[in-house]
View 1: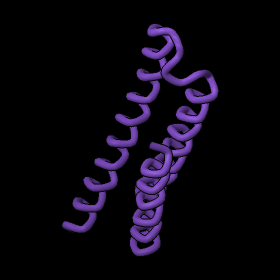
View 2: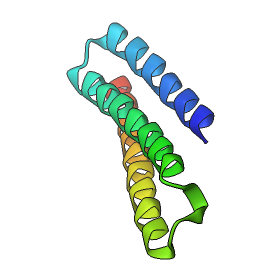
View 3: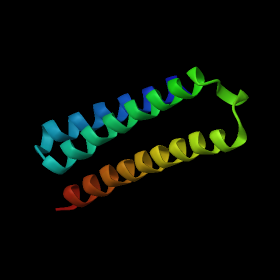
View 4: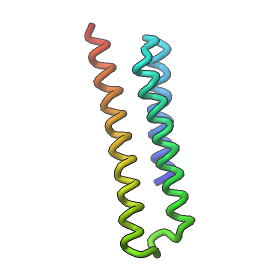
Length: 93
């Protein structure tokens, strides 16, 4: 999943940068920066999971990894929604 996550994060960064350069909107810049940080955190989490033993770990440990992965995924989804809402509302003016 590292490659799709990195690719989607890169696309978010490119789109966010293009929108920012066009509108000079600090909210867009903040959302884009946060999405880049979250993308990096997701990749780091996956790397640490594999270094810790991957699926061979105890069930309780796997649940903690899964919770971290879920939270970061949800956070990225919220940031993506925020970019869309901000883009739609700013464009409607």
